[in-house]
Amino acid sequence: MIKHLAAVTVFTLAACSAATQAQSDASAAPSGPFSKKHMFSLGITRQSTNTSVSATSENFEPVVINLDNLGVDERDNSYFIDYRYRFTPKWSIYAGSYQFSGSGEAVTERDLNYDGVEFTTGSEIRSELDIDVYILDVLYTVHRSNSVEIMLGVGVHALDLGASFAGNVSVNDQSSEFRRASSTLLAPVPNLRGTATWALNKHFGFSLVAGWLSADVDDYSGDFVYGHLRASYQISDRFGASLGYQVTDIDITEARSRSKLSFDTEIDGPSLTLTYSF
Image 1 (spheres, rainbow, N blue to C red):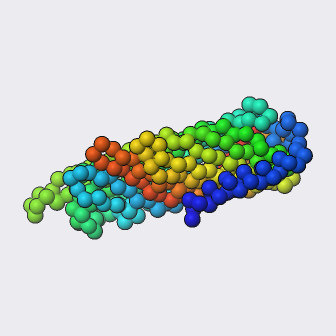
Image 2: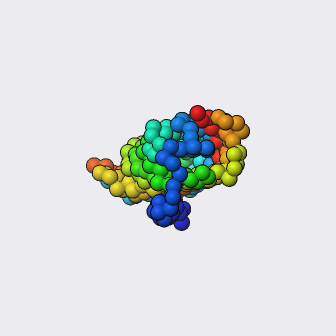
Image 3: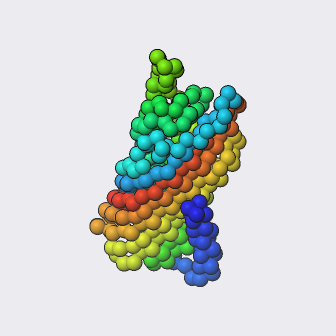
């Protein structure tokens, strides 16, 4: 459901923009709440995650590992930063980054293998998960009035995903050995992006950012969707703050020469954002 929500939102924005283009639009030069060329945003979000990973090897049967079962923290305080530059009245560049990380320890309830390393039942394993997302988009204003602006665009996401497992594994009744397995997946993939901003008055407003991308590029397959809804308050001419909710869904697989690496994760949570624009 989450996957289709953001995609539907983007195409809904496109349909709305097509309808409104037939109406009279504001002047080409932005004014009022849309007159700022530069906007910096810094935020924090309290995210929860449900993540499964696998790194298959030709020597083992494929195993999907649910990180919740290995004690990885379900919630984490994460930070994000972004910047938008309106270089013409209609065109803008957006760049941003956000991350999630979690770790934990648990005793395995079954035999596991990850990237060619086996962990037997009863082993105490420490697990770590790191997700970093980098965004670069070009956006075009398809509709603007005194209170509403709708932008659509394309760009590139770089997904940097990592998982690691480490612990003492029983070899026989008398001895054990320390084993560690880790892998990272760095996938640069194109994306579609849509934004809608509604200024209720001089101080209050709402904004929605939604996007979708297909990760079916070269050795990668899967998709990535996200959405961020915010209610904002403009404290002064340059400073603002907003409360919102962010949702991200990543399902991506990389086919390697003798193995396959997969990440399937859903991340969501409330956000607090501070903005500076001029």
